[in-house]
Image (cartoon, rainbow, N blue to C red):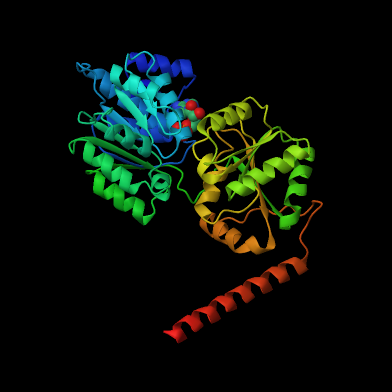
Length: 406
Ligand code: AMP
C-alpha cells in the first residue's frame, strides 16, 4: 500500500515524499481512512509505530479541505503528557503540513508566555499542548477552544499516570461536545478504557503491537549483577561492546543524577534528563545526545517517554521498572524502523520479582548473559530471598499489631 492509496491530497503527498516516507505504517493504514471519514478513533499504539503521522496527516487533510475561518481559530487540539512529546508532535505537523498553509503552535510549561501568547493572538489552526500550560492560557483568556472540531489525546495512559485527568476534564469542558476525538494510548488499563468510553462516540478501534509484545528487531540481554557492581558493569560494557551512545533508564531523578556524575568522573560524556531539569537544559541535553556529543543519556521514565532519537542501537535498564509495561516502553526506544537494537537489562538479586513480572507480561524469558566480570553468586540470591521473606514477615506482624490495637 502507498500513501496514494489513502487518497491524500497533493500538498501532503509532496511533504511525505520529502520526509522520505514511502509506505504508510500499519497504524497509519488503519487510522488515516477512519479519521478522514470523520470517525472517532481508539488506537492502541506505542511510540515508534508512526502513530503521530497517523493522526497528524488526516487532521491536516480535513482542515485543509475547509475554508480558513476569519479570524483564524483553533480547529484541532492535541494534548500530550510531556513537553518533549508536544514538541515532537509539533515538528511532525510542521513537516507534513508544510505545503498546506495551515498554522500550528506548540505550547508547554517551563518557557516564557510571551512568544506563545503572541502566536496565539496572530491566529493558528492547530494547537499542540501539555494540559497544564493550556489551562493557564485558557484561564488568562489567551486561548479560545470553542471552534475545536478535532481533539487528540496522545499517550493518554501516560497523561493519566501523571495525574492529568482533572486537567483533561477541564479542557473537555472548554471545547464543543460535537467534535471528532482521536484517542491514542500504548496500554488500555481499566482507567484508560473508562476515559476512552466516556469521551469517544462509536470509535473505530485500531491496534498495533500490543504492549505485552516486544518487537522482533530488539535483542534482549539480561545481566544478573549486584547493585554495587552495576556502574562498573556499565563501564565495562561501554568499553567492550562498541556502544557508541546509549539511553540508560533509572527509576529516580537522584539515581539518574548520581549515575551521570559517576560516568563523567570515569571520562564518559553523560547527562541526566528528568522532570526537575529546566526545559532549556532538557532541550540542550537532548540535542547534544542526538549529535552524539553526549554518549550516555541517563533518563527517568517520565522524561524518556516521547524522546525520539533515531538510530539508537542500545538501551540499558540500569534498574528494573516497577511496572512491567514500562519495560516494554523502555526497550521500544531501540530497534526502530526495521533496524536491529539491543536492550540490556541489569537485574540485582532483589529485583527478580520485577523481572518475573516482565517475563510474565511478554511471555518470554530474557536470555541471560553470564559471561561478564561481575556475576551474582548463588549466595547473593539466597540472601535476597531471606531479606525479602524477613521484610514480608515484618510487614505481617506490623499489620497484626495494628489490628490488635483497634
Ligand atoms: P511515532 O510513532 O509517531 O513516534 O513515529 C516514529 C518514527 O517513525 C518517527 O521518527 C517518524 O518520523 C517515523 N515515521 C512515521 N511514519 C513513517 C512512515 N510511513 N515511513 C517512515 N517513517 C515513518
